Length: 186
Image (tube, rainbow, N blue to C red):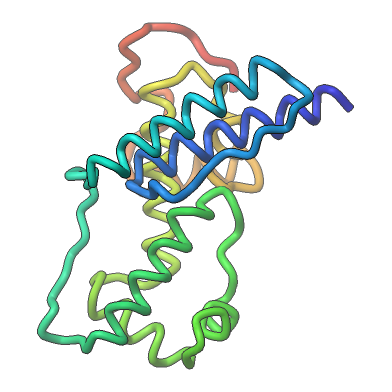
């Protein structure tokens, strides 16, 4: 039971760090009161998010392709909401476009059309690319085993992750430059 709680705490920390990296400054960690070290780290991360929010931080590394002349304000808002949903749920399976459309109060055609016109890709392809970008960053910046990175990025297993990673980057995760030079277990 304790191991499961630790995994949940680690996932919560990753979720918070990714939210910060993606510019989602409204996300906050919940203190669980059962682990003093976790609560201390959660408090520090929440304070960091508050400071960045006060500074009106904008993440300059987020690249959003936009052609604002093609869409009206309601379409832009819809796509923005879907993007926020995707960024905040990268570790979860993406709902069908029908479910997403219902979640955001529109129809499937309008959702797909607006998203493709604004982002120049499909919703699923965007979601998959973002999961793989997240995985690439985790490989570069952490010493987590590849299996854990795959799970943190919403892949059901390591072989599925490996195949998708190779397809996108044309090299396996083991080839990603690791500045710290530590070995990983897959």
